[in-house]
Image 1: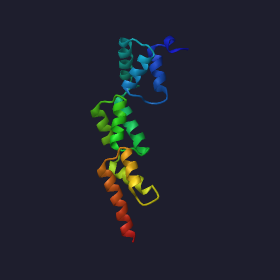
Image 2: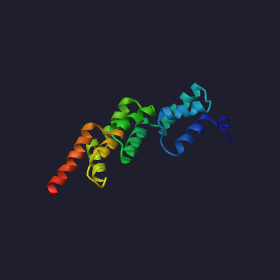
Image 3: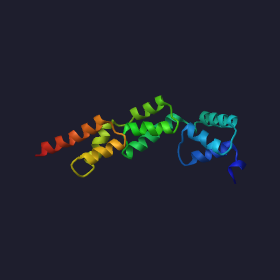
Image 4: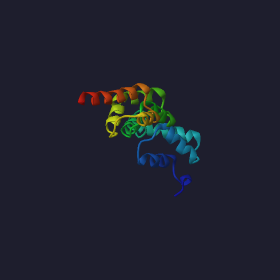
Length: 148
């Protein structure tokens, strides 16, 4: 059955079947399927009322997923923004995560070797702040100094 033969609700539920999506993602999916703007608004509002669509829940789950995959706060905020999540909602989701310096330190300690410029550059590319990187790398060197 093509998208044109499905109701807007069927299309949206299909998009949400595998995992949460943001309001913006569902709106875009419906628009790509040729659903009229009024029907998009009605469908999204119904899904929000029923609890199937919740940007705060999406943002928290997505932020946690990205943090577990080794991304820093800036990357996570940009990703959430790309999904149309409001700035305040994204900030709250990032704030709920384990601290960025702690996550960076975990990545550094799990790298298997002494921290170097390549590791610091990788953390930077993954959206970690300079302070988090410096703290993680300095903490690793402090551990090495204590063991010597």
